[in-house]
Image 1 (cartoon, rainbow, N blue to C red):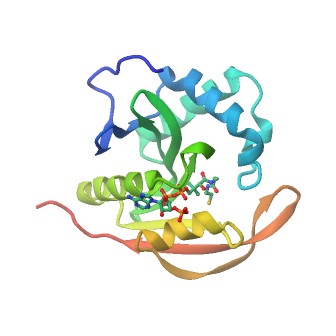
Image 2: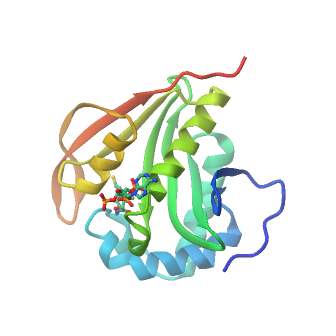
Length: 188
Ligand SMILES: CC(C)(COP(=O)(O)OP(=O)(O)OC[C@H]1O[C@@H](n2cnc3c(N)ncnc32)[C@H](O)[C@@H]1OP(=O)(O)O)[C@@H](O)C(=O)NCCC(=O)NCCS
């Protein structure tokens, strides 16, 4: 359960009961609990969960992401369903000149298979495309990460190529697919 949100916080509505909320200290506890309960499972696809110790690690991570978010070099949003944080959707990096954003996401294991990431991703991309901040959206994922490849394909991304041994995970370098989608819809 999270506290009530002040109005000035950046929020992207997705659908009834589902929204994206910019990284903020108020999410430290729920996010940390979510990471802990998904840590072993997430470690199959992401390298960082093994390094998360106490709640202070999550706080430091969230606060540095908030700073990058405010400066426009990254964007990190909590996926909030009802009153619960159920995942994270982000631009891990933004190249402002190229208007290119590198997307990352993860979900609570029990919340997979409901289209949550797909619906959030659609709202997220159109939000930044309309603002004119990002026009090239990129997803890079391990070739073996079937669910993440499906997210890219389900959301209209095109496979541009395969990056050889580009992702270090659990002691090995894995090939990565690179997908992109261009959305040009700047409001006049
Ligand atoms: C990658 C990950 C976010 C995908 O989650 P997901 O729930 O499969 O993704 P989506 O939101 O696109 O949901 C699609 C599923 O919901 C179903 N669905 C239900 N309603 C839907 C809707 N309105 N729209 C789309 N799909 C819907 C689809 O049929 C599909 O189910 P299936 O996989 O059983 O066929 C999740 O597996 C995850 O967190 N993995 C670990 C971390 C990770 O790998 N991150 C990416 C690193 S590159």
